[in-house]
Image 1 (cartoon, rainbow, N blue to C red):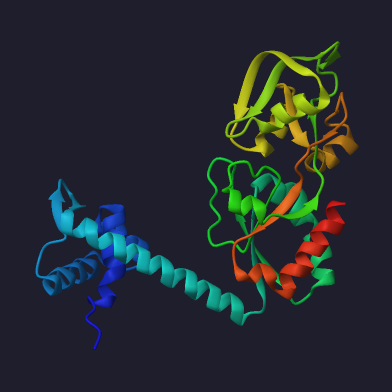
Image 2 (cartoon, rainbow, N blue to C red; image 1 turned 45 degrees about the vertical axis):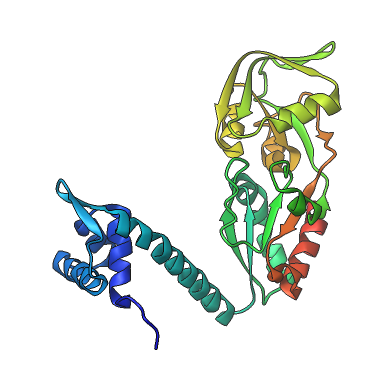
Length: 289
């Protein structure tokens, strides 16, 4: 026989511990304040000791509560992930793909109808990840060009998908362009979490960026929008600005330069070796080309 705490009270405990308030926990769980309070009392009665201390009008975990929260949160996370996977599997083969928000919005999602035409039974679940914080969130595949912060073992497992080509882009008429061994511009637009695109371009193109000020943004999408607004010059991958280049909202004074590394998918689960994953990777290679 398992010796377990009152399972019905664990969600109330986790929500109250996380939010520091019975009222907020009740609102999140769709229960009354009294119902959550009763469940907390039943949990503490079963434990034989208090899990919270009073903190003004709210509650604060004590040492016992803090220790309990660690394994309760971990158990609920595991249960939630398994439940989501089970529901996904019941609806058909699902492939969980993580990539940057900009790549998803500007390139991947608009082209997904082409994938579903070739693999009608497959379904994709997308998560966003960033260069600063690699939040794979249980993804089966992570698609990225900059894998410099990945562990060596993950980089070694990367599956090549296609070349990348970066170049400086700006609004038409913006005073920027090559000048001898320099690329001059009043303002450079940088990414908050990685400078590798500018550094790689300088090394490959042989031009030194010369600028007066630098503006920084946390997402490539915002860097692109800032360039369109005439705030400066952004360094972006060619595929992410195809529409803007075609419509003349952006120009590329130096064209685009290929980098040594390219787009790749890093597998993080056994689902990366399924027919759906193979079909998705094959489609990605063909479409990126």
